[in-house]
Image (cartoon, rainbow, N blue to C red):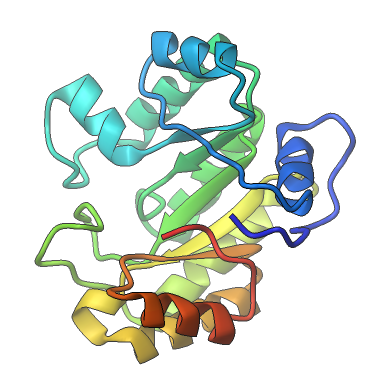
Length: 217
């Protein structure tokens, strides 16, 4: 994760704790958790944050692959259970936001109430696919920008970190993916998650050209 500060946050929130971890300059490892047991074990082992992926939720709860099958309410209930099992800052995958801008707003408001430290929202068409599967497609950039703006607006005074993810590398190429990432920065995203660069050179180019702290890809 980047060592750059993300945004000003309050003293006690999970988002503030995550901001401080990112600003400290050390490697922050956030293991994936998918049930109460893994949440408790990750905290007990001394990790300082945890990650809740849509793929692990779909596989563990539904026994199905990450193909956009989890509903907004199913994922929120899953996160609530994890939140009850650990005090660690949680970074949560909210897929495409579960619909249009109104759905995105409701999703963000829900996770604010749950005390989630950060979320990432992606620009795939719905139903989406795991970022490492073939056959992905992305929505027009204007639509994705509008959803990022909706997420930022819905956060309001809450301290949640908004991570905008683009899956454009595979269907459109690296240049378009970087352009999309910067459009999401302009829309208010705090961090960027550029999915699946294909080489070290591409990773370096992303780091040089994206105008925001980067989530590891």
